[in-house]
Amino acid sequence: MPDIPYYRLLDRAAFASAKASVAEARRWLSKVLDRHPRREDAVILLSEAVTNSVVHTRSTAIEVTVHADVDGRLLVTVTDEGADTVPGIPAHPVDDLAESGRGVRLIRALAARWGFTEEQSRCSLWFVLTPVAPSANGDLTA
Image (cartoon, rainbow, N blue to C red; front, side, top):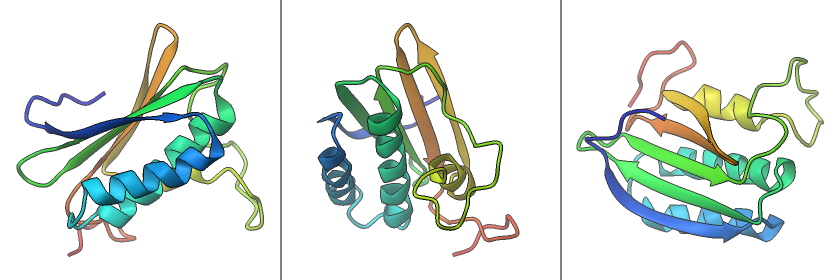
């Protein structure tokens, strides 16, 4: 996980590992980030990360923390009870009509940084969003 000495905790929550929790987590984060310029991106990425935890892990609960720094960067961490696999990008391109396989690709595309850590029987997927979204060519746009 990235160093967070200059990040302050905005909020944390725990959700049951159930499909209904994905929408609950989205609503929660939307309220926490209220007027942040990357709120919508953060909500989309959180939705993908929580969905992955619900679908691909043996978790009973999923913990989410949100930190921000003075420049408006966000650090969102989703922690679950781990699985036999680790978060990654599928080796084969995702079919346009496929119902899964896009979560980590979206996180990689929209986040300034992302990664995961494994400690004992827990896995934390994290991503950092800058206040300004990267453009398709990698430049920062307003």
